[in-house]
Image 1 (tube, rainbow, N blue to C red):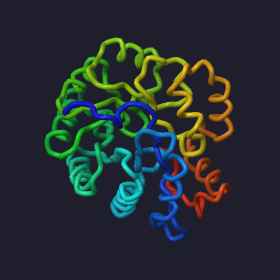
Image 2: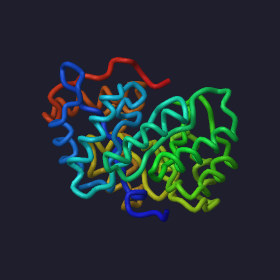
Image 3: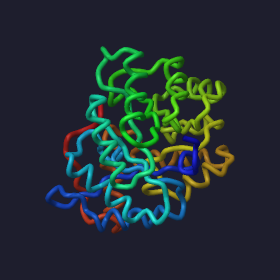
Image 4: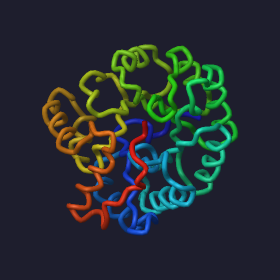
Length: 269
């Protein structure tokens, strides 16, 4: 499928603004996107920072749709956090109908999922979902881990266009980059950027509140901004299991969001 813009640079992993009754706060989404748009290369609603594991079908749909409406030309990569391939494909088809650019998804959930089943998951998601796929390489949501050889096989699938590496092992990220997997490798954890300077970009929760810093980290060198990055991660609580709550509180304080409400289901682990 090729790798158009939107799979490198800075992707903001958006929080999901909610009203007091738990609906998606559409005007807040527009306000949030407007504050980050000048600094980022793509928008990612409904992944972990967006509490994607806890969103109802309606909340997920409304958040993705609202992001598409205010993107003003930016690619929208829709997060999908569902436990089975079948459910992920269903959401991907919905996302395609909403006009998103690609989907970002982990493996199926559960420690009993085999490496071959993980490969088939991405093959099926790309083949039946109707959109390019960014592999969300992580452990917290799915409860399992892609082996390096499996991940490289997945990267060779024609529908796979990037990897968001949030597994927390900078040596493994560097090894994946060095293996030249044929797709961009994005760092999914901001605090590890100083240890993974070979990546093609990063997916940043921090960009909700510090988009200019995130842009500077991409244009680099990262070493010029290491101290500022560490301070920002600490200031905004990105090491907390409910980091998205801290981000929402700060955005509410700034007047970007009209409530601090979360889905109320706790962290992803």
